[in-house]
View (cartoon, rainbow, N blue to C red):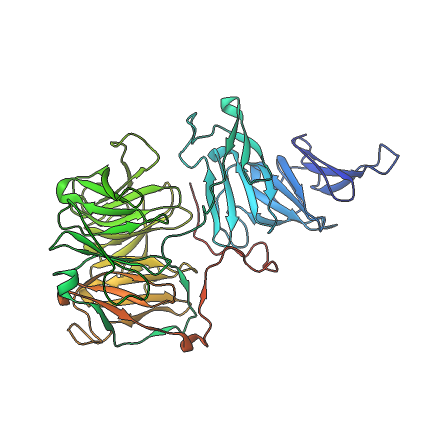
Amino acid sequence: MLGLFVDIYDTLYCSMYYDQQVVKRSLNDPVMASNRVAAGTGIEGSDSNQLDGPGGIFVDVNLDLYVTDCYNDRVQLFQSEESNGITVAGSKSLTPTITLDCPTGIVLDAEKYLFIVDLGNHRIVGSSWNGFRCIIGCYGEGSQPSQLNYPFSFSFDHSGNIFVTDQGNSRIQKFLLMKDSFALSFNEPKFCPTATWNFNGITFANRSIVGQDPTTIFVSTNNTVYVVNKEKNTIVIWQEGSGNPTKIIHGNFTKPYSLFVTTNGDIYIDDGLNNRVQKWNAETSTFDTVMNVNSSCYGLFVDINDTLYCSMSNRHQVVKRSLNDSTLASNRVAAGTGIYGSASNQLDIPSGIFVDVNLDLYVADGYNNRVQLFQSGESNGTTVAGGTSLNRTITLRFPTGIILDAEKYLFIVDNNNHRIVGSSLNGFRCLVGCHGVGSQSNQLNYPFSFSFDHSGNIFVTDQLNSRIQKFQYFEESCGNELKRKSIVEDEDETRDEFRTELLNN
């Protein structure tokens, strides 16, 4: 027996691992030999009515039975009184969203999102409105506090903390729920397929404020705008609704190409010409070195697990390090071999980067005229935009910036085409800068990066025009239905409606 469960009607379920079956009996039935089959035929197999090594089980209030089907690398849902199961997690599900290696434990939360012990991958994964992502054990097999070794089962306490049986390490590990752990510092609007922006931009800031050739901009969820003035080596900040800068931070950095702001207001800034990335601490108003690099970072990003990424353009590589690691010299390669090239594991002047909640990395691969997706733990990338992609939908010329919206559609700064393009159900299309290179209000001149505000407006570093342009989102283009991400989705969403990229750790 690898799984036991008692449902709301006092029916006891037993997952019989070696007998390839889940059986049940009512605890109110005085006859002990009254077992009934809940799932499985008793013969190992991978058909919808079969199991192979069933483990952890969960029965919801609808009496639907969820079974971790170890050797089939899947989770099966057997709806009440049904003998054929539906694969709701695993590579053979109707909407593949995650690859599992012998799942052994499962829990559903109050919103019916799945949390699974992925034994063979030494981790726990969970689903949400963004699909599946790694939650615990995301740094490979081991005995460190952040690692697991063949975990088998887990349980939540009433505060949301997770207790795990860490089998190979002969210990029980407790992982604390981080409050506001789902909060993002940047805006990911949700647009309809017909979303449009005003072709004519408004100059938000000119050279007198942002200096010559600005390259980086960040707009936070509270609509605070951050821009670097490379001439004066300052960070210029506008609070929401302000037409003039409300704060200027002076720093000991040289011509930064990128910055990233976290939810607590800390600012990470490229100082690659001095072989480092610095952090401005919002609480102490001081700078500290948080990463050693040997190239300017054309892109910076901090993911949901507090891992800092730097896109080292001149080294043709993206590196990363955990900000929770006390060792400064702990960089790891996230993408690229360090030698320029166009193979799937290579980059050539990488620039903007984006890491989603699945820890999948998107890289604007400049001289290869493409955007590469490196799925979590993978060294070979997949071309998701550009002339060499599997589904060729757009031609890029030196892309430098990239953002994903709430639906994981790509928005790209197409630098040498002097425009920003975006994807939707209908493929890619030009959004702003669609009238050729120039300095008119409807033109851009080698734009480098951009950011959305919480209303969906686009802010662009219009590099050779030495200005920041703001392009207004037309809400009426979607029938006034701009929808922003929220933690709580409709309770009526089907349990397999996960919009996500494949997580294959």
